Image: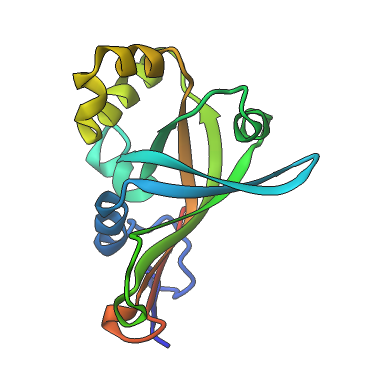
Length: 174
């Protein structure tokens, strides 16, 4: 089982740049399954996401990718993720893959609802990823009234069986 970490110390920490293979894999998918826990126990839900990065290339290299998704704060997952210090785990992969070529991501990180200028900038990233939203006045208006969230991963793992069974590449925010 091969494992690459993107850092010299081999443990995936230390503020190293997020590997390009992980960034490409995040950009290749559009749906993630969020896992979280609340007073009723663990739960998971699927949401569409767009991926972005910090405003400068230097900041993005160290701080890693950012995922944006839309969901109402009144949903079960919205209520769970709106709390202080909210964290989620997630996966992203394409359906219908053969196990020998399975490629997907696992991650975990902090979530927050975006407001003001942060929301406006993230909304542009979301619209660029999902142009059908901008193309439908009804859908766009509905989503603009819904909360836009940021999931900032602090750990990511790419699994790529196409490079050998169990091949993994990991990254952690320093």
